[in-house]
Image 1 (cartoon, chains in turn red, cyan):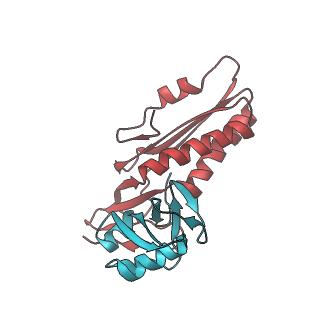
Image 2: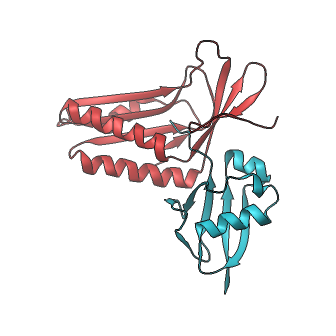
Length: 143
Length: 83
């Protein structure tokens, strides 16, 4: 099994994977490519250190399972060019009750933001591309 | 004693050095910081990489003073932007 996909993310299989009779609460988070007001983003190209992404996702999911006993988490991250409006990540978390489902889901996406070695290159309508640096200023990418 | 480590470059850093990996010989024992210094001084374009980038050793995030052994894979990681 891989946590990565180059195809659009299907949430049905993720929800099915975490579903069980004893888990009465399920939380689903989708992160989608955005083009805000005044922006001209057409899509984002995601690339990653794929071997480490798989390892790091495994660690994050295991941590969530240890912190919220009875919770089950599934996650997919997309690679390649993702158009505006489509999901780049989906996190599904199910637990016996809603609080643990929300908390486990939130934990996974927050750890992803801090730890997952994935990078984004924004594509703009005028043909320019920019590496996204959440810690500082965007860096223009060579054409 | 010297040893060889494989250094991997990603995203903007790969563009700066014009490659995705490089085998680097360096004096052992060494740290992540030693690897970064060697990259910045011996790999063409490496001087453009920050002095203290994020790094990973063998698929785990590693501190600047973490030990590096012969055969390790050391990755220099631009600020991560997953999700």
